[in-house]
Image 1 (cartoon, rainbow, N blue to C red):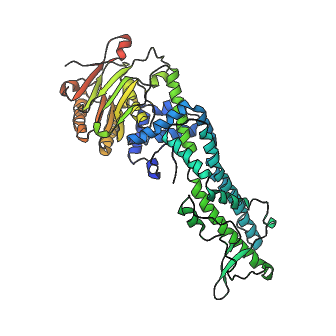
Image 2 (spheres, rainbow, N blue to C red):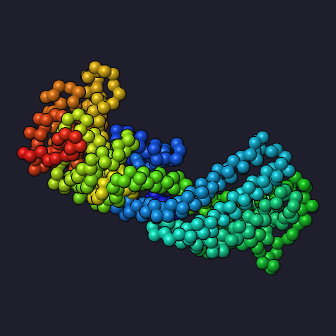
Image 3 (tube, helix red, strand yellow):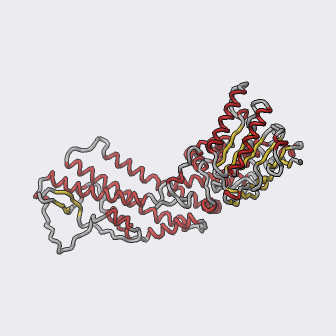
Length: 508
């Protein structure tokens, strides 16, 4: 069992992007300049990297997206809770690494060769693990107390709160803390041990274990506790005919070996069960850094006095995208005020195969294309989008191809740039999945006009066969005469002044 604040139905596979779609997503984030924008909101390099990795794995169901949206809304209304939990889980995530580091330091100079050295090392390992166990168990109460101070509403935070409350009252965990507390003294010489040994027919000792420790029963943690601990520490009844032998009757070396084996057995079991419990909340500090960045993003849009909304998400089969007063947040980062940013309405209906945009240079074509792509990616990350209202279908992938003229190429290398664009488009077609969104910016315009128009026209005609939608910003005006306006929406940027950034339907 593992809790997650990013995934309602968590499993390790969900955090691994599909190959080769992950490579395309990296390219998409670069083309849309999302990587540059995110850098503005992140606290440090670690949170920046983590945030981008989450964006590369779009959520694919509406309930997963709502799960994340609701948690973000809790943190927006309760920012102090986010700060409290970030501190707790940052400390929590360091527990295991500190445990491993301290355990490694025991053998800094190699494995001891004497029986006394082995015994001391075994006890030191047990003592360190006992501290790890007690600290891990104590966090359930700390997390519960932190969340109970606030009126949370999201399923994710309420689930963690209820679980911590249950675990805080769990008697088995109390017993783990009690066992751990037995082994927190400085040296092994502070103890007296009673050890039970198992011998074979030749009186060779096959195993040994400590006696008179607290018995762990199978309670609300389920079979995992009982399975991990087995019969370790279970007291035999007084009627059991088990002879007690004074350890002094053995050779000292043998006595140390027997005790060392008994302590190692307890160390192994305590490590296993604590590691099992630790997994419940491992990694939540990274997930909270995602919400920390998301919260800064929301505050940024709010301070700019521009609209934002949580979009209504629809299944892929609805195959649509609608946004009112959509804009590109990059324009704010570039220094434009809200009075200078033009808001546009975008409609891609289910029956629409794609959108064609045209307009003069610096009219805002690329900015609008970025706004559409960023809205789709942020929506499937559970984040607000830059619009006053939005409804969109979930996309299985978002692909981009931005003209080589938009990138860094050697001047005059037209043939090389066109070949590169052909390879990029071919890569998209090879990896295309149903219900994708393809964003094309001035594609095939580094070659002759006729070749570019014919080449891209054939590609756009094929895309609807996969239920994909495309948005194409182009100066290949011949395309606007070739396509059926009943299937392809055609729009242009026109006018002068601020109107140059406003889109209008091309009348046919």
